[in-house]
Amino acid sequence: MRVYDIIQKKRDNASLTSAEIDYIISGFTRGDIPDYQMSALLMAIYFNGMDARELTELTEAMTRSGDTVDLSAFGDQTVDKHSTGGVGDKTTLIVAPIVATLGGVVAKMSGRGLGHTGGTVDKLEAIPGYRTTMDRAAFLAQVQHHGVAVIGQSGHIAPADKKIYALRDVTATVESIPLIASSIMSKKLAAGAKNIVLDVKAGSGAFMKSVDDARRLAETMVGIGRGAGRRMTAVVTNMDVPLGRAVGNALEVLEAAEVLSRRSSDGLLYQICRELSARMLCLCHGWTYARSCDAVDTCVAEGAALNKFRDWIVGQGGDAGFIDDPSRLGAAAFQVPFAYAGGTGYIAHMDAETIGKAASALGAGREKTGDTIDPLAGIVLQKSTGDFVKNGDTIAVMHTSDERRINDALSYLSHENALTFSTDKPEPQPLIYDVVT
Ligand code: URA
Image (cartoon, rainbow, N blue to C red; front, side, top):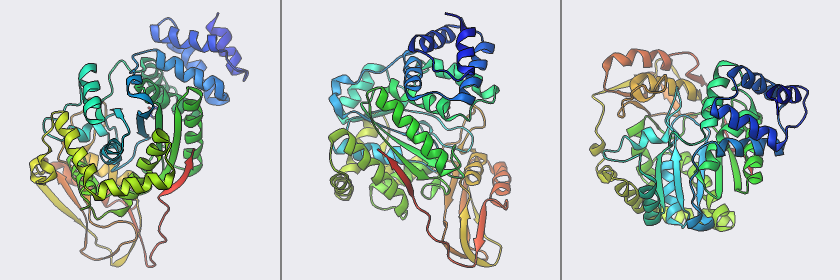
């Protein structure tokens, strides 16, 4: 087999065979295929795409390039959730204990935040003592005991994806739905769950800015997962506005505890968590959607999900005292209100990406891999889209341990894109655009 012939075939829009895909992925991972040939192939895929069979085989070859987690001992109830990244997205912290309370087995590997988007591992590390790295035996024991474990993704999961992503990043081939879908799904397949729910976000704070692109990505990933023998659902959700009131690691952990304790004022955050939890339960138990939603509401209302949240955190070494006493997570030394100074009006749009960048500027995020973050930094929104505001009203409170960061955050929040106002109350936006089952 010659790499040249494989590149030529894809350039001419033909389908690659399973053996050709395997040859490319294993050869590139070993270092036998040079970057310039892989770059040419990636560009050919960028322009010509791949059919469903090729994509599943590409993804499975990427999965096989590294470690995989065998969850078969837990039967067919293993269920994972993946979000394509957003601002203020603390859904894993809420959904995982809900689903585990109701008999789903959540053995999850999560990522870190980059740029304006947050990552679950950073949020969990804001909890004193919580271990985001565990050896395999301890991870599986936690799953066995509590039905839920969430750790950081090991460096040996889908190394082919890591190498390919680095190349895509410098060859203008990141924005390709087949390549994004295979990249995400290679890691999800490696994580081992039989059932996978994808939360594909669309909007200003998301990777996919349009609902149509998000839907195409959702359909492509569902196709890959099904082809690989997994049960799949994707939910296309709105990321035009930050999810919930808090953006920043410890702040989001506290908001998750509030939702599970029914103390949260943000009904939309609960709605999206209810939807994702219900979809996970439909898949792993075969329950109807209505039964799944009722079960979610009941387990939250009765406090069972909150108890599971506590047990999960303690099981992974964390101090769960913040659930009853939020001060146990600490508080940022500087908490500065951002006030509105433009007359009166309704907030017509709150740009999620800009709010995410402001939170990152306060120390909640990292510009490049390896930067340290301030777990207490972030933004708590006091107002959201559709609220009426007048001169002097506080729209958000900025939290940081480094006062010098306030000006950077202010320049984002005061930017004309951050907030737009109207004299009429805006129509509520849909929270869930589509469900791909
Ligand atoms: N996230 C991934 O894991 N891969 C991509 O290609 C894009 C987003």
